[in-house]
Image (tube, rainbow, N blue to C red; front, side, top):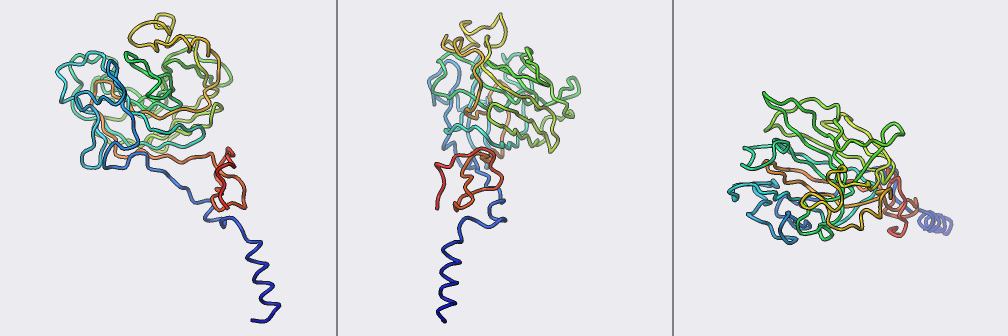
Length: 296
């Protein structure tokens, strides 16, 4: 090879760095549920120690994560959640779910065809033993039938508060504008979570709810159900001292609230990562820099 060609070749390869545009734009979705078992998840059911999977409430069958109550005789406030092991801050979450079967006897009326996924949640390890719901933002799932017509992809706020159109909202639950969807129908639910700035709920491709500035609330749900109320509330009074602090990150948890539900997909696209274009793991869709993760 001529000397000039060698110099040009070496110069080109020395200067070339980072992925090409197509590679940088390709979305790297991370499956949180492996369709085989509950690896990477922690279970917390009210009244039981962490990872005590009482009555086999959570299990995997035929590549589906099931919330099942066939091992129960009656529901007595065993509200449960299964938490992914890692917290996130800026991300897109995609879940495919459907309700099935009948609500367990003893389940509250409001929990009929009711479940959800919690985002920006406290960790499973930080819940008190009797605590029924984590401090979080709940993307609430509701199904409709011949008697009840309800939207899905709503927001409920255990221990939290959000703003809409620039003003704080004091309602515990806020309805979305989704269509009514029946039980046994698979639903694709997505949450686009941008730290403590803005959150979008998307149902079957339609943005049905948007809110902003999530913070820790002065109450767990309302004045009658405050931080020190037994049962539903977080026992730790430390949360009262966090009133008004922004929710910048947290865990993801799937809910068990007395009606059977199953999940066939739980996956996440992280929007926080290396934003140095020279790095081999640079992604053009990142919106929050974490250049400590850059690889060269």
